[in-house]
Image (cartoon, rainbow, N blue to C red; front, side):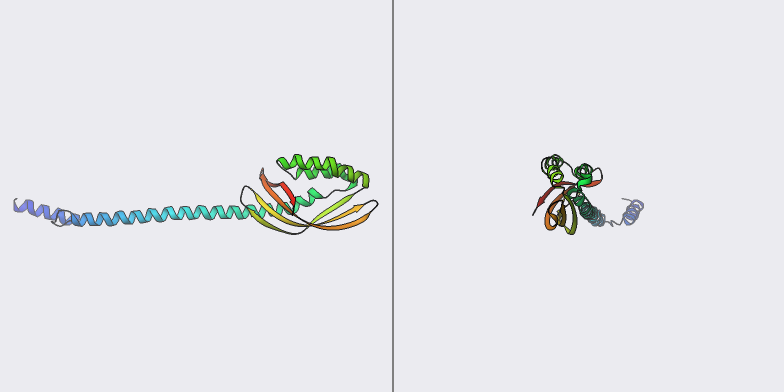
Length: 184
């Protein structure tokens, strides 16, 4: 090679950082860059996953809070009625429910509650004494309610009783409704 060509090769090699060893510096620099890019991508994926998990946890917490508040409002409406406004109260009770529970509870109201309430002139008021979430997510929340029920009967006077119920709440059109209720 001529001296000019050799000098030109050295100049190009110096610009690229390869020296005259045939590219070892470039290869080492490329490997370091590849590892760095890989670490950055891994960190970005981890951040997205952690962000998704945090969002999901926040959504579940909001669902539990909203369902608890709805249960505390809806269960007393479900279990309270007055002889004077019985048909309206029982229709309101059904409106608090969803799914198969609507039909099941409707049957109980028509077969047991309505005839007994009319015959014995029974009125009852349910209030929530305490409440808490048992478990839940954005699709379903189970709530435990401690209730006090004050019942007035035409012949028997007034009685007060306590009870506990486990209530399953499910979202319906942006609101939480009662999907099941069982004494515990």
